[in-house]
Image (cartoon, rainbow, N blue to C red; front, side, top):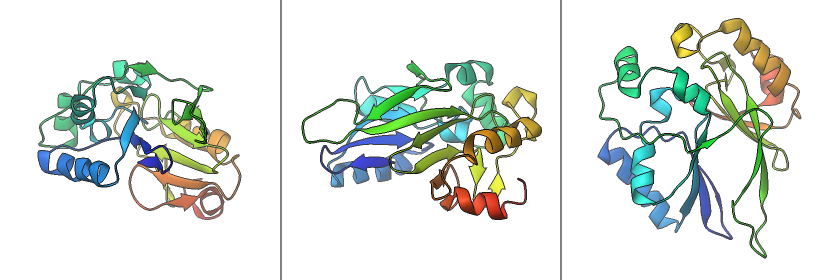
Length: 208
């Protein structure tokens, strides 16, 4: 999650909540900090990253869900994915409402207001873990949300098979061509695990 203290708007990235208890923790955080979501950002449509979208769209009416509709349409249904991953959970899923592709740009907060800085967000499409793994790059802030594309000294799994979008060589190529060319000091926030930097991954990642 990323938020702006001036406007009290936020973006929720990959809401994977699968129980009411998990949703309540997120909801209490939003309420305590007086934050209102501008949008939900989906890096890829594997079930552990999208199961909680419905909680948010139910609570916040007309909340847009940004992501790759092509990834959404080419993956198995979320319930079937849960069985594949061995996840026993009720799905609270809402589909993508705004399609994003490589090269798209948008700004946060979504609405321009006097006295509130808008942060530029660039969309990078890095397939290989899923059919379309979107990374959300904030060039002015030198940070990126990498989903399951790039982790601390690791990369996303590509052994789930073609139906789930797995392709190892394609994933490595995506990372090398689109992520490692970013400024070395760029902070990387993965879908799982600790934050890292582009410099760290270029220097120490054994998969690259």
